[in-house]
Length: 92
Image 1 (tube, rainbow, N blue to C red):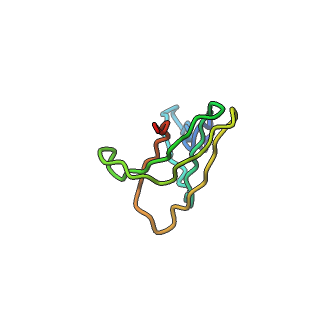
Image 2: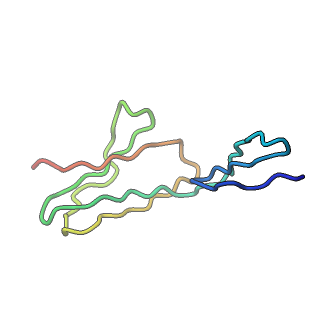
Protein backbone atom coordinates (compact mmCIF):
# COMPACT_ATOMS: atom_id res chain seq x y z
CA UNK A 1 0.00 0.00 0.00
CA UNK A 2 1.35 3.46 -0.92
CA UNK A 3 1.62 6.51 1.34
CA UNK A 4 -1.49 8.49 2.27
CA UNK A 5 -1.81 12.10 3.43
CA UNK A 6 -3.21 12.35 6.95
CA UNK A 7 -2.96 16.11 7.53
CA UNK A 8 -1.64 19.25 5.86
CA UNK A 9 -0.64 22.27 7.93
CA UNK A 10 1.70 25.22 7.30
CA UNK A 11 3.80 23.60 4.61
CA UNK A 12 4.25 20.27 6.35
CA UNK A 13 2.62 17.03 5.30
CA UNK A 14 2.18 14.12 7.68
CA UNK A 15 2.27 10.97 5.61
CA UNK A 16 1.49 7.44 6.75
CA UNK A 17 3.51 4.76 4.99
CA UNK A 18 3.05 0.98 4.95
CA UNK A 19 3.13 -0.31 8.49
CA UNK A 20 1.65 2.91 9.90
CA UNK A 21 4.99 4.66 10.50
CA UNK A 22 4.43 8.46 10.30
CA UNK A 23 6.84 10.46 8.17
CA UNK A 24 6.95 14.28 8.11
CA UNK A 25 7.81 15.86 4.76
CA UNK A 26 8.65 19.53 4.33
CA UNK A 27 7.12 21.06 1.23
CA UNK A 28 9.72 23.57 0.10
CA UNK A 29 8.26 26.79 -1.24
CA UNK A 30 10.35 29.64 -2.58
CA UNK A 31 9.34 32.93 -1.00
CA UNK A 32 10.20 36.11 -2.89
CA UNK A 33 8.64 38.55 -0.43
CA UNK A 34 8.00 39.11 3.25
CA UNK A 35 4.83 40.75 4.51
CA UNK A 36 4.50 42.81 7.67
CA UNK A 37 0.97 43.36 9.04
CA UNK A 38 -0.22 44.88 12.29
CA UNK A 39 -3.25 46.66 13.69
CA UNK A 40 -2.86 50.38 14.23
CA UNK A 41 -4.31 53.00 16.53
CA UNK A 42 -5.75 56.12 14.91
CA UNK A 43 -3.18 58.93 14.89
CA UNK A 44 -0.24 56.98 16.32
CA UNK A 45 2.98 56.86 14.28
CA UNK A 46 4.68 53.53 13.54
CA UNK A 47 8.15 52.40 12.50
CA UNK A 48 9.09 49.16 10.71
CA UNK A 49 12.60 47.95 11.53
CA UNK A 50 14.59 45.03 10.12
CA UNK A 51 17.35 42.84 11.45
CA UNK A 52 19.43 39.95 10.15
CA UNK A 53 20.40 38.70 13.62
CA UNK A 54 17.60 39.92 15.99
CA UNK A 55 20.12 41.89 18.06
CA UNK A 56 20.61 45.02 15.94
CA UNK A 57 17.55 46.71 14.42
CA UNK A 58 17.74 49.16 11.51
CA UNK A 59 14.90 51.40 10.33
CA UNK A 60 13.17 50.04 7.22
CA UNK A 61 10.20 52.42 6.90
CA UNK A 62 8.97 55.08 9.30
CA UNK A 63 6.36 57.75 9.86
CA UNK A 64 3.48 55.36 9.13
CA UNK A 65 0.33 57.04 10.45
CA UNK A 66 -2.17 54.72 12.12
CA UNK A 67 -5.68 54.76 10.66
CA UNK A 68 -7.32 52.49 13.21
CA UNK A 69 -7.08 49.68 10.65
CA UNK A 70 -4.33 47.39 9.47
CA UNK A 71 -0.90 48.56 8.33
CA UNK A 72 0.45 46.11 5.75
CA UNK A 73 3.68 46.27 3.80
CA UNK A 74 5.24 43.83 1.34
CA UNK A 75 9.03 43.79 0.87
CA UNK A 76 10.99 41.85 -1.75
CA UNK A 77 13.38 39.16 -0.52
CA UNK A 78 15.09 38.62 -3.87
CA UNK A 79 18.87 38.67 -3.44
CA UNK A 80 18.45 39.66 0.22
CA UNK A 81 19.79 37.91 3.33
CA UNK A 82 17.41 36.30 5.82
CA UNK A 83 15.85 39.07 7.88
CA UNK A 84 13.29 39.74 10.54
CA UNK A 85 10.81 42.64 10.73
CA UNK A 86 9.49 44.42 13.81
CA UNK A 87 6.79 47.09 14.04
CA UNK A 88 6.91 49.57 16.92
CA UNK A 89 5.35 52.89 17.82
CA UNK A 90 7.53 55.90 17.07
CA UNK A 91 8.01 58.18 20.05
CA UNK A 92 8.17 61.84 18.93
